[in-house]
Amino acid sequence: MRVLRIIVALTLISTLVKAQSKSNPAVAESKGQETILNTQSELQVSEVFEGPDCIGRAANSITVVNTLIKGGSAGCLDLQATDNIDLEDFFDSEFGSSFDARIVSSITDPDPDPDPDPDPIEKVCENLANHGPANPHLYGHASSNSFVGDLISLYTPEYKIEGLTDWKLMSTSGPAKPGSDLKHHYFREPSDGNSHNIILRTKAGCQEYRDVRNQKVNSNTLEEMMTFSGLGAMNPKITDYYIMVNSELENRGLYEQIPVYNLFTDRVVNNLALRVNGQDYAAFRYYNYALFNIRGNSDRMDTPALFPPQKDFVLDISDDGFATASRYNVYRNYQGGHWSTVTTMTRHDGKVTATVQGINWEIDQILVNTATGQSYSNIPAFGNVFDLGYLADGTYIFKSKTYHGVTINEKIVIKVKRPSIVNEY
Picture 1 (cartoon, rainbow, N blue to C red):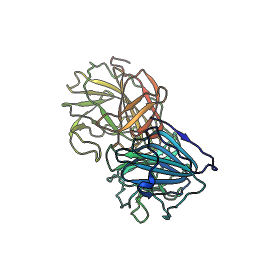
Picture 2: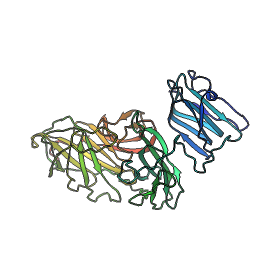
Picture 3: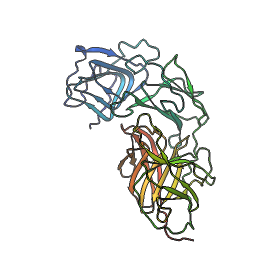
Picture 4: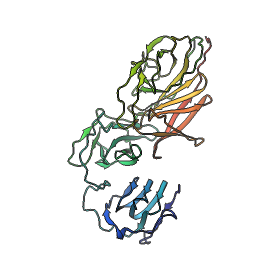
């Protein structure tokens, strides 16, 4: 991986930058030229370029991030900017491909389309409805004081925050999964402190999809950890499974009863049951419905909605009628918007898993420990569940990324505290 930053003065014309030593010289003139010039002030390029056409991108300022120009298909990318071109994070131009980056005095051959679009083919209207096939998620980040959203679709969609922005194109992190034509798209827009409705569409003339709720960035992230005592002793046992916690803290207070929608296991475990805070009992149920459109689906277990615990609680899970069990301290906090709960489950032996709601759970994701730089990929069954290994009690800050390396949230709070398995009063 090479990180290259290009900043060239306006007086320098037609500067050529080769991405890597294995890149061929620019050969755009020998190919069919498909110029998609964009005269907006800022443009982010995050794509895989391949095929016989040379793709053109232009703007005053261009940032290239998580981009690959394939060599086997002789991919070609031609960039024009009047101010600067920055190559950030992963960028690779394979042998046999071409890359031309030029700082110019003015953009040549401007796109006559008044609503320029980075998609190389004519877009067809897509269904962007809430809980539809694109599975949009629109919410707020307290840490960045921003409205954010993402979805999965074939074409790059547009968003509008009513009363705050006009129509704007989303950014694209890359394929929903490697090799897929469907892509993951996202946006981040600074909040003005007010509540707004967010509207989605594929392009002008397509149906507009309003969010089913107004959004407001909530600064009450509920990060205080509650304490428990008097739960009694238990005979510990470790069983091989992971749990995804489906939960919501929106507009709730620290000491309110806040239900968990349900728990999902990543596999079938017979006779599995749980107790909440040593008393409320529920059995897991066999679950074989499809949760995902893009990810693979497998049979698993789920629970009914839990008896409403407070924000944090203790969970005992057993497969033998509680002769033995695994005990977890379950800690929840809030990222600042709808369905953006972070749930940390610390098992009695110190094993920690986390469910991070926010990014579309269809795609693979990464948590990065901001203090150590250590990265953790999601488990195979869920895009938003992470095995963090054995951690000492304490508070840890992570950032969440798509598997392409695009950072979505810079502050994911994980608090670890082992539960006691002996009598404590």
